[in-house]
Length: 207
Image (cartoon, rainbow, N blue to C red):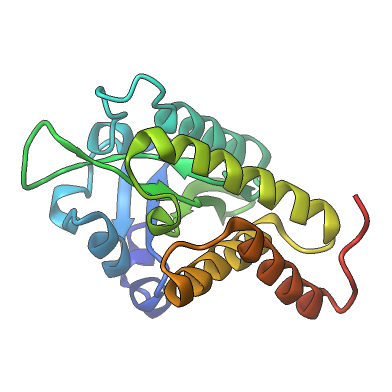
């Protein structure tokens, strides 16, 4: 399993990737994952995933551990890829022990097979924190808004994977934000819909 870490495709992937075994122990991380989490490989390899990345005790609504655990257990049980959607999951601040850094991700968990069995899970994340910025009081509403828009767009383009729809939506948010500074969410959704229509090759379905 550790041989995966030495392969070129794993080390050079721009997307942050982490590999866990059936005990949810970290077996490999790529440089992109080290960079996005600010946690070096040597501090992660061999540790249980949720010991390295526990829930933020200061957030009474933290559910990252529960949802990530359920997703990975599903992948091991079914041997099929699982997309977690938009997930707030704060990470420990290595510069200030005991403190956590606010983060929002779109994680995807994929099975690694060996001789027909799922022996590991590849955990790939995209950092979308800039789309759902602090303060947390407004972040909850923004997160709900983003999830609701992604759900509607997903119904309008059912043939497109959910993560592809969300990726277009978050990128559209960044584009509008760079243009206007404080984007109107209706503009964000309108831009995302146009781009998805181009990708799907048809107008948005009525919902």
